Length: 130
Length: 130
Length: 130
Length: 130
Image 1 (cartoon, rainbow over the protein chains, first blue to last red):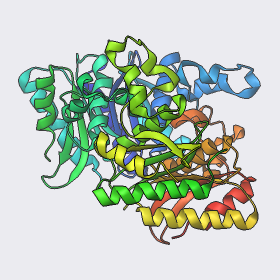
Image 2: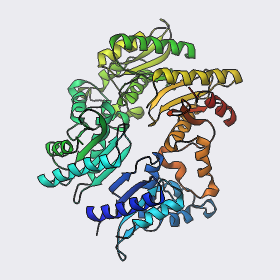
Image 3: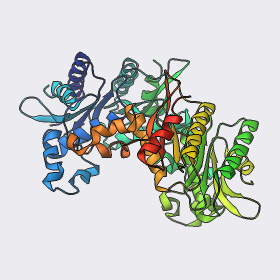
Image 4: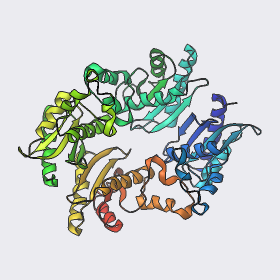
């Protein structure tokens, strides 16, 4: 099953509401389970450099079906996974990317960038259950 | 002046309403006046190949501040502009990309792909005045 | 011999003066004889899409040591030079790119984009002898 | 507001004067606030490898609206921001990139490469207030 527009909008606006609540201007990417772009929004004043980071986090979560920071554990230099970071056009392995689920099933992946990694995580989390 | 989230949403939903009205599943891209992604939506059942086409049309309109099909007039083989097509990462010169204005000022560029060029034009047109 | 800053500035400002004279907002690229960027200016209001075109014209002239439209003669579809257009990262084979000389020796290559091909040629021509 | 040719030239020549004063052959890039190239100069004898570094520093400063070395603080391996370095086509996070302002407003971004990071910083600094 793939995410519908209504579901993607719900995830996006839940994330935007949280971003507004904690005072962060974020870029928010929703990818379907195959990694194709479904919905994207750049909030006013969000960093331009965070557009691509938000996409990278969502893509990284999608590629391995886990949170982006979980993938990051495999990317740390001491892991010796030489070159893995550059695969699939470049992974982004820190907080802010995760699955979007109905509680049981993965429908999509969300990636957030604009604040600190912890803030990005909190915003993504708010959009991760629909 | 650059487009705000509220303005971009207005343009996007006007375009989506038109797409629904004429029965087309479209990809819709809104870029700011410098070409950075502001808002994107892929309607349910829209072609995956149209994601990039919608972005290319919006980018092409932005790069030359005119409709994408107008840029296309310069790209026709008989114009002898060999290679122009590949500049700036690749231009997309047919109907579906145009400025988004308040009537007087360009705030953004919209690119639509999913139906025929004429349908894409009609959908983009619906989102082009806010 | 390669072009100096003083020589490159002379070529650039001769081209800008011509552009102002004929009312065109141009992008102007000066490459050394090895194709490395030496000087670039985007005039106010010049098309963003013309940045890359001006670079492509200068690069194309440099790669074959002749005017960009001369290279274009080899790129026409009827020439059967399949794929040549895409070589060296993409050629741009129409008017606006040419050598910069002291009359006898090639010191650099200039590429201009912003107006019609004929206007771009005229602007480049103004910067081509120093 | 975006930078004009006169303003960009002022920033560039202030930077070149400083480079001459401290005996460094630098590459100097001026990007508008959206990251599009406005003005570029490679001083005589400047490293060819520094062309792209100067552009990368200016781009990095632009993407996050802060000095490039400030962005670099987020890129250090111990920060665990795996992959951030490769986003937006590659970031350059050390001294030499910064905003160009009138004192109050950011008009552009400057990136300098050719000397040591400290020298590049000093040269960029000289061009950063116009």
